[in-house]
Length: 131
Image 1 (tube, helix red, strand yellow):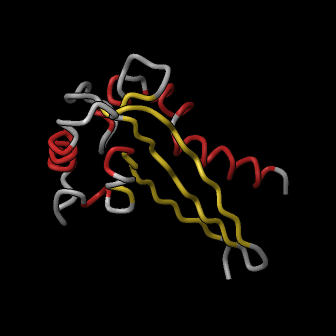
Image 2 (tube, helix red, strand yellow):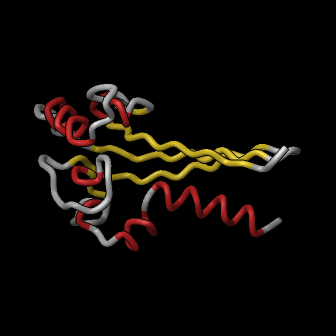
């Protein structure tokens, strides 16, 4: 009987046909270890020139009378090695398009402005403020 929302994020790598996708958090194992996930991804991409990838966040918002889906996407590339120590997950190996730093090297304020999650939440916030 209450309004609610839920979100999830995945990393889609072009050369891997969209993997890890919905399995991003547990890509290397069920332990959900970020370093293991990044190591596996870097290993799998070692022979690929195309390192294009995108983070995608989906937010589902439901009220008693309506449902909405908000999608945020951030295009970029997977680096060849880990750089930076900010953020979490795949941030040390994801460099957004148009930037010279990985998410893990960026100030959190900048990452929040350009990230997939920031974009999706901005859509949700816009929707909520129009009501």
